[in-house]
Image (cartoon, rainbow, N blue to C red; front, side, top):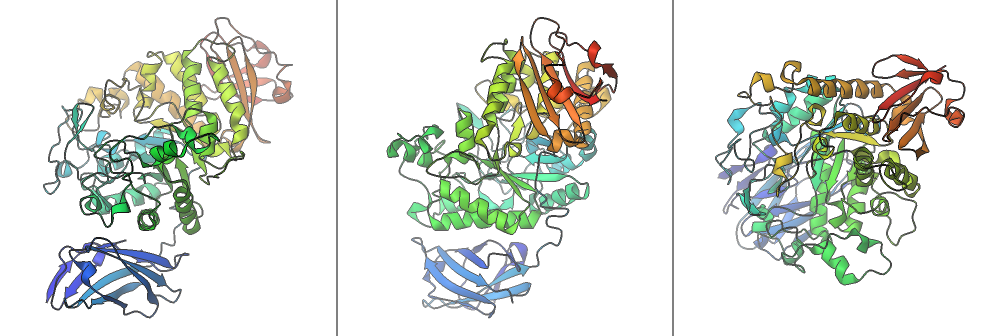
Length: 625
């Protein structure tokens, strides 16, 4: 008898004929799920020749068998009753004149910690740290190169190559995040990217960033694999921290096993072939839009090596939905950031969000759409607009507030310029059901680094940090921004994705940004400033759950308040050219009854009557009676 042992205790026993490298997806499941339905994808050479599939467990029924266009696939629709017990059960495959096979599939008990120490959701009480694992820290050099993978290179001297960062390297610095005031880590995708070097913009690039999936149920071994990720998530949760995983539903790498061997022609969007989308999200809510341009937006391929998934195909949709549920339960992640949200089928996006929230009520999902307006940003989340389609995402990456803050730091004040852009952008929060669910940021892995954007001006940078950590929403900082890492994109994203100094054993101690000794005076000032403000924010009810009131900018001075019945915080920034003294009578709606202003960084208090703000100064102040 031939036996093939597969991942997660799943195996095949053969009496006469063996299916080579049979894959079963999901690889395992759980009893006690709120949705009793499960669709198994069986993938193996000629598996479609079998004619009979039988469950040997009476609590698990096979309700439907679907043969794909490819004879290498079969889909089984299961109904797992509430009476089903954890353990391994058998599916018998027979008929077709090719013998008998048994598939052993495991059902596990669900975690009792869901919603307690794991899968807690991410809210405005949190502070997110976004990083690219390959570029943060290398804790295990032995996994830098995996001999079974197509790309067998790791070269830190090449900005387009992999550099060796991994989960172990991140874990080595958990105390660093705690010191900084970070509560949540968001990693760019960690799923296997077994792709060769690909040509992008004239460069041979590795999939170090993680957006080229080749096997949904495998975590990339160069990061630490499935076991390493499980350990990583468990360790973060044990430290009281949270994890956000990056989802990509729109496309996969062209070396994904189901791209190399598609189940059916409609698995991918082929109407656009390898043509790019038009990148105009307006087509979804424009009452005058053409169908041809909407189709191009949905079906276009970013680049030829990223096949575009057809989420209107129910088997594709089930595969993606079940994988998202599987990952959440398997690793206990607290939230999903969904890449390329606006390029995905709208009903599919609502369906996957609904499925996740059904199983994990506290889970947070927010989408990523680089859009041109607040209307567009609000369209893709729960909103107050009347539109033909209503999205159900809780929040979005708030590019409009990002652009507004960048303008506030860099542009001269005017009616619609400079800090006026922050004011006018926030006035449009009327479009959102809950703007506090939006994730706000100053830069990320697709943008110029913010310290370079402000021409390395610390006063401007400090102003931006003040806004980031006090405005409404969930603040996110990009790795290295806290120690003033800089650079702009130069025909590639790689220049804004450099290694965090000190994350590799051969980095010089004097350049180790994880330590005070390895930072310049300005870098240390930035680190200490963010740390002080972020840690104050943790315990500030006004900043994490309070209301927002803003005043129209005047002479380049922008003032807003965060407040509740326990605390009032005033944030004032002077982007003008003259020293400014607030008119306390004008601000009395929020300042009445208070006499002093306590600087939350220095802890020093100033009489309100004596307070003034010089040009380029910005303060976060707690009002004291």
